[in-house]
Image 1 (tube, rainbow, N blue to C red):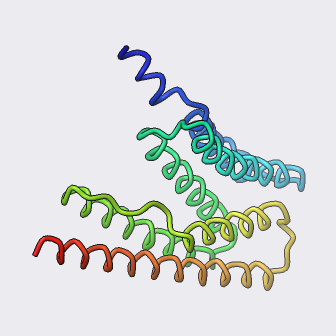
Image 2 (image 1 turned 180 degrees about the horizontal axis):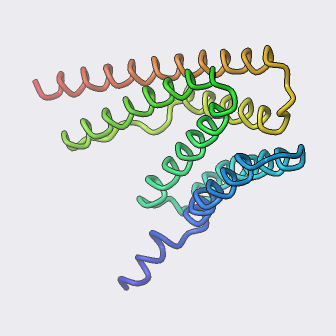
Length: 192
């Protein structure tokens, strides 16, 4: 009985896909940072594209086949954030103005992490990803993968993509702050 529950909680297709995404990170980093030919950038970009596709697929599988698990609810966002952060850092090494996106990313994710801990200490849980967060993630992945796939893009295009990413991150961050404040106020009202 215990083994069966353990397998149902951990050994699910969505969880294995999340682990696969985590394993792709060092492969991507190695290929991207050592890239010398256009084909190397193409391979690195395709690795990240596969990672994004498995991210979309694992959630659909989890919901459709009732494979949602506590492990998956932790592992999936870790794989997402680790992949995004890796993409940002690798690109920032080559394009220094992308460090601004890295700073926004750390600020947004740091806030979400701290807010999540605060709520857990109160015995509450925050909502999952907001729509603005999902849109931000999609825009971020598409633009960053495009920069990886096309290393000869004009610097003005890369700057424009970086600004767009920054705008989406700021909007998502503001939405998470607003939602956190709203939920905190509701909890205070209930506690009174």
